[in-house]
Image 1 (tube, rainbow, N blue to C red):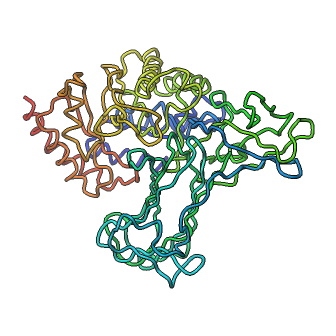
Image 2: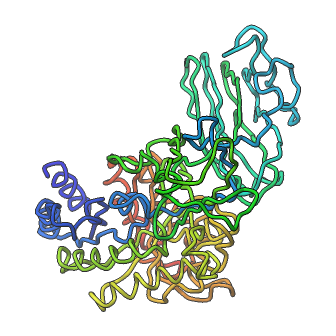
Image 3: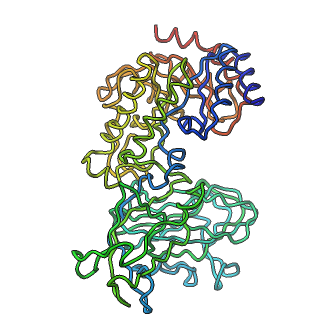
Length: 526
């Protein structure tokens, strides 16, 4: 409480008129076990200092999934083959993948160096296993290794690699994409190697999606200093990592030679689930873990060495996070109860900020596919449901939304992460009264013009708040630059100091620069 009150005091002294309260506790206000009193004290204290308070609501991720992780948006996995072991007691996944070429770099430059980037080679003196590894040393620019390989569509795979560094400085990541087109990205993760790191193992489970071939691309982007080794890059087909067992994610097991013959859970084989999702949160704490071994039951008809197929759904964790299904009935019921509780705790809310941002998984579950919508249509359908719920509770309260999922200059595009389908056009279903929180700071003028209705594809003239700063380190310059970029574009009603790193060091300088440059902005739109 004391730290929150101190921050509120600083904001009030700097001249801020309100605050957005982002707190995971907002998602639990309807639960009897949650203590509302501390949040209510913060709200009352802020209002006593003259600040309007707006809660961030309608999260579509981690907080909802704490109640039931099986509500996550899972991707289908089709035809994973399992074989009953020789003892007749367990199902074992059949690995259809033959292996990567030269996975340990023992064959020199074979298979990995087609990009021809400078600073990349083979080191025969340092290795995780064997006698060789890939080495990136003092790269002048991008320095990457890659390999293209065949896969089965809609299967789950497990990638493992090892890296080591010495006096290293640089940016490293891992990408896996389909059909030799980086737009079809299946994995996009930063590796974050330390300066002096002994061999570290990295694992990812991922879905191949609709692709019959994929490419691994990893290494350094933008140059580096020091040495960075990669070794023992392996791939295998796997199964049941983050398997989901919810109303929207059915599972079936059948005879591989006669798919019409279905085997029964708890009769032919034991109940299937991911033990990690049955334990205590955090549920999505890794990108890979050993899947369960499925016991074969003596009460059923499965026999030793029998081959079965399985269709199922799995969550693929993206940047350490998961999205809730937009179509599962569980989250829908929870959302209605939560909205009512929010209205009770925030009777004088200055508005509601909907949490539809960076939604990297969508339109994958069986319940989503049953709606036969594009992801853009599905997003609009869900947003409008939430809009109606809050409008029913507070008919005149302003409603705000992050701009990224409705902006073609950001995420309203085709092939956005693991979203199945095209998000283009999502802006067409956005209610006209929604105010945009615009955080596209790298392309702010174009984005602001878009939401101002200057493009025939998006003619609605929306009000906007520039969600600025974003931990740039210079609050004054951030506010000045942001207002200059939206010069001549009407509809901007304010700026918001936004930080994901809890960096409030620039709170005062940002506010001062916003005030100093506000009149110039207003003059530009008269």
